[in-house]
Length: 368
Image (cartoon, rainbow, N blue to C red; front, side):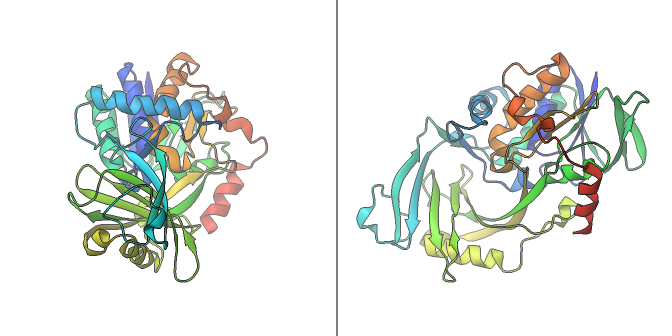
């Protein structure tokens, strides 16, 4: 059995890993590079129970457990560790501080513990994606550079492969896992829209000056705009900070993603106000990425309606890194066995949007 996976992000790599582990020949087709978009520029934050009470609860809990399991099973270092997570406010005196985090500015108040080492963790997302793909390749998977330009279907409608840079590549099944760029596949397949929400981030070189605590803060810019910066110190001595989202147009090529004018400068000023350590630290990366989202905020995971051997896995929004392992495991089960066993995929059925015109959506997107 041969499966083509369109998209070399964390979702595609995870699907390839679980398929190849079961003896399926998986080929990941990626246009720009492995983890070149949100999978390489995300925060890598993991939470056991933050999705409880929603349709994502089962997926998130299974995936949180799989992250710990994969850290034991797969060789390589991607910064997996448990950590404590706090919430707080900037611009207020420390008179009500419940937790002493000494590398923050004096007017940052940390007053909530949002997660413990039993319920929150982190990975370095680019390294995690790379490790999954390497593990898949050790089981016989392939990574192929190229741009998917179309799909191939038999006369009875069953998928039989894709077109890559004009070359026909045949397979027994096809998975669309291209993040927000999955909307390009709506030109060829009946897929609901996937949109891209842009976020900006910085990576600082902080060494041992920052404690291993994740922070979710509120910060009001001098302009009055309220921001919600997220701060994730990493095991490699760097600190990741993200904030400032926008609905900027999605470029056709992931390599064309760039920060909005002025956004990085605003984020740097924000970081300087939050911590003297960040104010004096070297900036290693100034970046932006698009998170894939759907109309109802839930991912698309499952069979593409009306087409045999065609599948989609995208639209995970801010929980892509967290939910990648359980998505890959469930997709492998669905493709090989005909149904997912470990997670109920019904809430993520791509057919839940009953009326959409895939071709029109793709053309409207290209004009933006």
